[in-house]
Length: 601
Ligand code: ADP
Ligand code: ASP
Ligand code: MG
Image: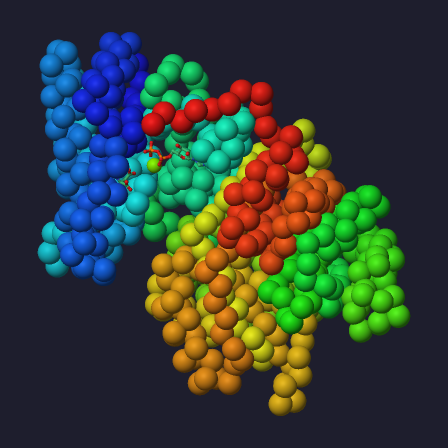
């Protein structure tokens, strides 16, 4: 006999028929000898409807009242599903987040779960009842008891947190697709189902708006080792297991406030090659990395920041042992990229050997803008200048001077209270069969850049500290290669993406800061799309980046920015080309299957 937590999303409980079908599945699972806690979402598009009503009254509704409003959607479903269960002879009891004892912090509309009081649930389970819990909501025990919600899509997080708290045998997420696919089947019907995916891969995909799983649910599954599967509520197909390696036992308090950083990594075995002033047009990155991969040179970080005039800089890092080879390729390709081979101020090759890469890693940094800022502030306080920055959802990597590496690692370990010894990044892993697992598109981001920030310790800390103070999350932070000397000071551009809803506020605030600190222009472009490939097998496999860039070049899609981590490559492209970019990349990696998925209406 197992204790199982099942979660049914909006479309799975979208009508009375669907609720009755869910009741049948629950009944069968109980009859097979299991105990069950069932988490449900609001019916169909109820939550969207409630948001719309609020917006008809106010463009900026009070967040407490939003929680009061949105939490009602799930309450309808719990009552109806309990009734449907009782109707077929299965004892059941519906419970709100507060009744279950899902205690959250007091942050309305995006509360994190602190703990779950399991006594009452255990009693009802002993009585042989199925417990039907309202997803996405909790209660905060501040000075007053307040209803909170976890943020859109948060029922997944409720389910996995309940599974962790109850030490359930596993957690099943039932939805309208057969599991996790190589990309969103609404955009690419030929997307293929995966049998399994690691939590780390899923975190990178999910935070990009892959939607099928709330990233915070994946974070809890990983931290507490909850076996997690995503399945279709329409069929009995096995679905996709989200796997994780065994983690040390954690207490069940401050469930979602676990330490934001799990590890510090460093690599002193790296060198940097940069191509300065290459033309800002489709095909350039493809040409460069195509040539590099033909020479079998494996690149690690790749960074392309926002264009400057009509040219761009592209920088990458390689292992020191292959630097000469990489440099030779860059030297050979540079003249081809010039408008005229004799124009030596175009496509200039710059090499730097004495660098180190230092990274902070942890799923807890998702949605917590202060973490990257804290890293930059820590490095600044240690007098370490940051040469390059590249971020992904669960990692921030900084390239620094090799002589600063020890100091950087020591100060970061102290700041983030990491007692285990820092990991020396593995230089190359055995090539996996399929390097790229999934492709994701995020259409909800805007790109921002600040020109001419002085190139000295503390600037990134100041900039991202300011954004964090206003609770604005940033990602894909990229610092440009190109240095301008203005007023005798070397200066660089820093570009990043923010959620589009935060972008106007960020712009106003940063424009003020720029005047105050003497930074250059603040640029905002809302019409962008972020497209990314994810896969743990891409490390140590030359040519993956080249293939992605070639697919984009072939379709004349210009790459505005590039950022990478070991398991992900992200390109920023024009918004209108986002879907096309996703489709051609998915195709290029041979991820398309012969079968087409039709998502139920
Ligand atoms: P639920 O209401 O069950 O929580 P969601 O709408 O939140 O369901 O999530 C399921 C949807 O996620 C699918 O219908 C699909 O369009 C979308 N999706 C995006 N990326 C993926 C992916 N890689 N695999 C599967 N589904 C995806
Ligand atoms: N009903 C909420 C939403 O639509 C929570 C969820 O479905 O996960 O965002
Ligand atoms: Mg969902």
